[in-house]
Amino acid sequence: MLELVDINKTYSTTAEAVCVLDRINLTIESGESVSFMGPSGSGKTTLLNLIGGLDKPSSGKVFLNRANLASLREGELARLRNTQIGFVFQLHYLLPQCTTLENVLLPTLARRRSEIEKNQAHKRAVELLEKVGLQKYHHVRPGQLSGGQRQRVAVARALINQPQLLLADEPTGSLDADTAQQIAQLLLELNQTEQVTLIVATHSGKLARQMQCQYRVANKQLVKIEQKKQ
Ligand SMILES: Nc1ncnc2c1ncn2[C@@H]1O[C@H](COP(=O)(O)OP(=O)(O)OP(=O)(O)O)[C@@H](O)[C@H]1O
Ligand SMILES: [Mg+2]
Image (tube, rainbow, N blue to C red):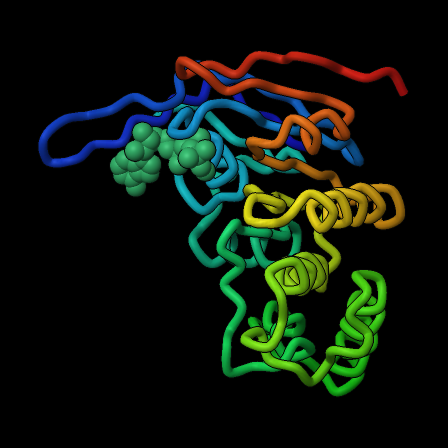
């Protein structure tokens, strides 16, 4: 479902050009779970941004379901991001003035919807909040939630449009071990039950090892560390 071909990413600042990723090739099949580990600054977030179409490679191509992201117009790319990809960021970016339920529904507001579609989205948001164990928190605002609960809202929001691909950047970074494990379990369960392809960037070896396929990002390269048997 995802293919990276000879990706190079060089950031050009006023002073110098810094190459972060060089000749990256990667194929991920639909439904797989994948982890990227590697030192701080090695390019994990950069890689997720390229995969998710939030940033463009300096050279090379990203194919999502055979569509070359570089060949899409900005509007088409935005639509693809909104409908096919879910993002969970380390800083979860929940809107503080909106309730839990409203935050989960945010990605559904990007385009005009019929009443029927709105009702379906609402039903799915309620189901997702139940799945992440927040059924009692629909009308609570992020400020009144713990870090782990906010992260679970972010996971539910990432899945509201039924994406095929879920990108999670340090989803357990700021959480204690038990809460981190709960989020890890939740991501893997959603990977299984929703058949969503899962890619996580993390510093947690424990989280990384729970994915089918583990990669290491270092020295501008991507190296496969382990592929579990099905
Ligand atoms: N917008 C940008 N402009 C210039 N340089 C950038 C930009 N974004 C990232 N970089 C540089 O690219 C390198 C990789 O950054 P990236 O955020 O991808 O690392 P990371 O592996 O996610 O690190 P961490 O584990 O700390 O999250 C870093 O050296 C960083 O300074
Ligand atoms: Mg990062």
